[in-house]
Image (tube, rainbow, N blue to C red; front, side, top):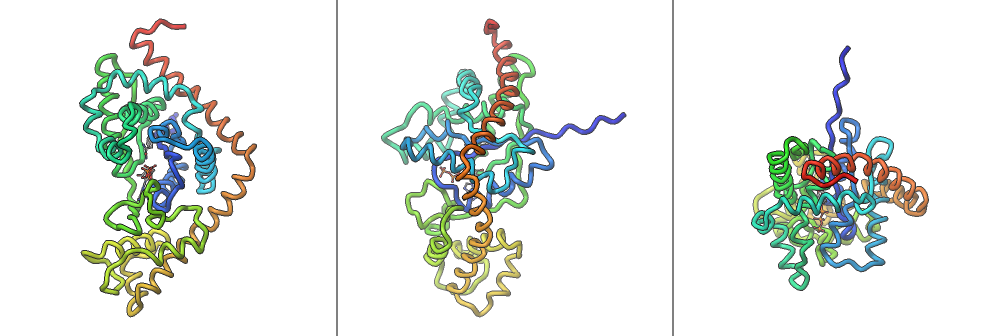
Length: 334
Ligand code: ATP
Ligand code: LTN
């Protein structure tokens, strides 16, 4: 008898370090939702990672819960996937410590995110910011994940996770699955509305640079109307037209139209009309998510039930891997 093919395991996480943006949605979350039918998906709100940058306690608590509710509203389904809050599963911090001892100072020093964030938060270059990648490796390796969907910015960290896993396996024999990056074919890279040479980032201090998934329709309209463009006033993809290229990319991601179709549709029209149309399309895409978010966030008991249920299962799975790794290292069993 044929055994049914075992579904591959996918792990990914998002930091609750601010308001989730249109970039996070189009570049990551929307794709996670689609993966749930074909893979055994495990998703987390990476709150332990977020404290590498100082968080204001009240905002932080709210951001964690908002991130959880928003991901459910985007379509993460706890009937199909595990979806928990990282700090609720204690094995993450425990394996991270062990992996710290198998990660070299030199390797961590080469991480571009560490270099960027050290410059940005020069008054708080803490040890957690430095060892951030070994916590990320722990997240992934605990579930023996086969694949990790990440954007370009996280590729270097994933490469390091692979190196840590291979090093550990090399010393102690096969312990961890070595994870591959999952490259999505449809993931859009959304750029800042104020400086389209930079990616749209939720930690950008200029609020006009990003659109939050939960921004009100008139705020979304205002932000798109203010978007930086060029002086050519022709809606088409081109060199030196980063702002318009970005808006066309967003329009295409949201409506499913190709850039040629969009160019044809806006022939002879100015940037003002185009910006309004992009904003309207984004508002329509986000409207049902915002409505579902309002339902979830007003039902704290339901949210708690969901994240507790997933955390309990995640603990069982991850404890097995942690025990295995500790036994191999030589820790005395309890
Ligand atoms: P921060 O500003 O706090 O570094 P961020 O907005 O860059 O955060 P992350 O939490 O680092 O977002 O990323 C979550 C996921 O969203 C990752 O998979 C990342 O690749 C993806 N992502 C982030 N920004 C964009 C973007 N502008 N376009 C497409 N995908 C993005
Ligand atoms: N560092 C990631 C978030 C993250 C993650 C992970 C992604 C934490 N742990 C494990 C993939 C796998 C970020 O900032 N996007």
